[in-house]
Image (cartoon, rainbow, N blue to C red; front, side, top):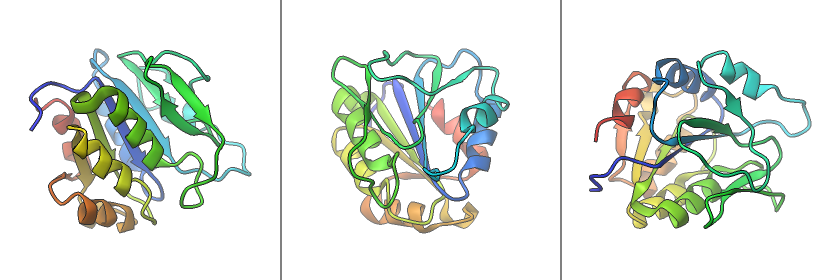
Length: 188
């Protein structure tokens, strides 16, 4: 197991995940030392103000990054609606408009995979409530690259399909209830 704290934490979720993310943001200290990237499934045909909704829960601004913005510690990034959010080797964001994955864009799998490619053992992936399998393969890849995986306890999910798929592919992932996530982020 990696003994270094993460440089980047990617949180992926879908149906039932927003309340968990809000709880996490409310507890996040202002001086957290990593980049926090949120990838949440949203309907692409409906205008979204998710960044503002989540921003109300945090003392730190929630930013939808632009293409080629640098990934910085102590920032909260939200994958923009209708784009996959990737991280490039020069540690900048890339907005990708390729095919939807599990009917979703942004999708969680490519975000986990690109974070693992760049940050390796300093990447952490957290997979939350959702109704499909997005995120499970990306989480497996992240662990293969030395990263750390946390999956929301399926019994605590409104929609457990996504965490169950994650645990099926990554059985060694840590399992946490929503109230435990904040402590897990800082447990190293």
